[in-house]
Length: 186
Image (cartoon, rainbow, N blue to C red):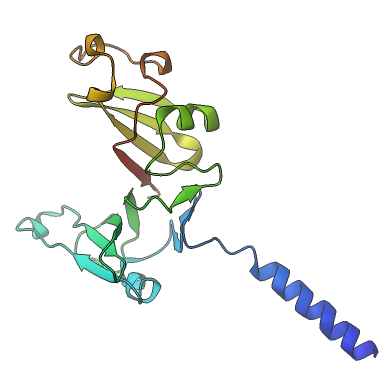
């Protein structure tokens, strides 16, 4: 009897300890699904064994420009585009990820289909950058950058490249065009 209670307690502790694993589509500051800020390019074949990995090698592969790696589900749906820190280095870690699939979500439910309102209601905005055709909203809490097309903005704000954007300039219903996670660990 005493041995079976001890066995039950051991199994209970093991199951609780294993439940802390991130979900396959969970995003946090240090991981996105099964990827962490220390995942190496060579590990991708194992991590995404059931998916398709497409490595693009450009003509500039030997110039030191990192090549992108696309991850697709077997059915063809694009999940992520990964950029390694170093080109042509299987031991390189991942520098940034472009998130395509809406199933990838932060703890607070933010995903590639979210709006500006979702960003500002759930996270502290660290910066807003004014680019030619878009604004980029940075959220340091999760190492994320969200690109919003200037077509989503009022017409009087689209063409002023010198305007210092603030959260009040961006409509709540402005859709995210691109969702990036960046790990700049050197």
